[in-house]
Length: 275
Image (cartoon, rainbow, N blue to C red; front, side, top):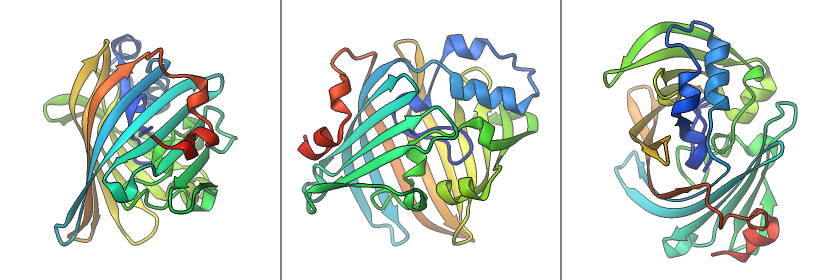
């Protein structure tokens, strides 16, 4: 997945929650320009290709849990990033798949297709549906792609804030347009950005519908091939004082700059072929 740390929740799988030490060093910890900080987060080095497996556990308000295993591949191309995800288990969702073309240009809408084995065809995700829940989780389709920092207003709320003892910037992010709010589903977000790693350690987002808040925490942050990766992400949706649902992601078997990843992996035909 492509979970980014910026304006909406800012998260998902693989390289989009990564940051290299080299890019982190390029920004001073005393920086107070919120636009520079968020642009640096967006521009951090993530490698050109990658693969991973992910365990997703979804728990509802009645404390009932479902666990799913997902395989993902991603590859950068001129103008953006392509990513394909296949559900591996359990059997009732096996071969359900999502293909995303995440374009760098802010004026160009990202493309996404969902394949459901029961229908035996892939369906394009419309802009109006991107704020909807992905496979019953606390993640949305919009969470799977990044957004152009130019489409958001940023403000440093605190130049020095601590998350689990780590020095961070606390930054407020607000979409500039109603279109962006509709597509992402978020009115605004707070993002705690690690000064040493240039990746989010936690976020708080105001959901457009249902008077809900969404909290995300990034944990087990460690390097793979010199690149910082959050190996555990917890997303919790809250309404009032009640927890609506929680999604826990655990990442395994990361491979960066994997030569086995090819352009042919990212087509609708490949999406519909299955594992």
